[in-house]
Length: 205
Length: 139
Image (cartoon, rainbow over all chains, first blue to last red; front, side, top):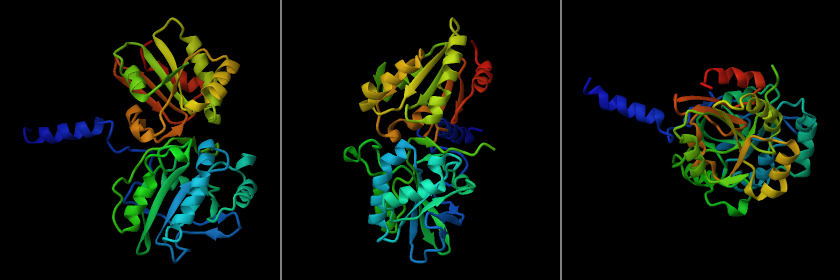
């Protein structure tokens, strides 16, 4: 018992520490293998992770048409694709929101992708199964996947940076820091970060 | 309406009081949050004189305080205590509110520091859900 006590105390301390890794909704954590999916892009084509043979990985971002935080990050997401697609990590944007809202419909997604000249796929997660598998809870919610053989391993989960309101006031570029490590073949020093966003609009069962 | 930094809010939430606090994190731009605000108002009104308080914590940008948040509160006639949390980086505070919160809004924490009870909800609540959750707490 005496030997166990320090361990037990440590476990308790970890469990109650406010800095303990967050046991978020069930979903992917760093190190998990992502299950591939096939979702319809705004151009009508089905997109899967395995489909792009050249990709070393992906920056998967659950985002949407209407959330003000998603809108605040839209230009930054477009910039991410411009920067990281040439490095082998293109953006794949997925809209998980219930498309019963006309502003989140497939047609509205097409219109947005066109008017803002998305250089990356913008996929509709019609059944919301992909968002549930990933454990996405909000928009925007971001996951970096790295190809390891046939698998795509979750290498970063969380925020793009530390200031949603104003890109000019960003002090820490969490995602860019992680991508610097990941593209250099190293695990991200900070692989899980926090962000605030709009709850995904789940379908009323 | 007070504008607070996180340490101030944290102190407030940690106060050793026997009052049960219903703390709702919301924003004017969050549609489901706005929809559920009347539920918090109803629960507040139903518990006047009891040791139950509602605290609405707005995550609107501080820059929107006068333009958007204050007019919103006035227009809706919200009487619950409201503060605006003026923090830009959730990594400095989100986990300290509750380790189970993934960052989606709305988020509600019911806490009684005297009985050390906590309940958290990372989704919209109805008056009925809120009342049921509250039954487990002293009042």
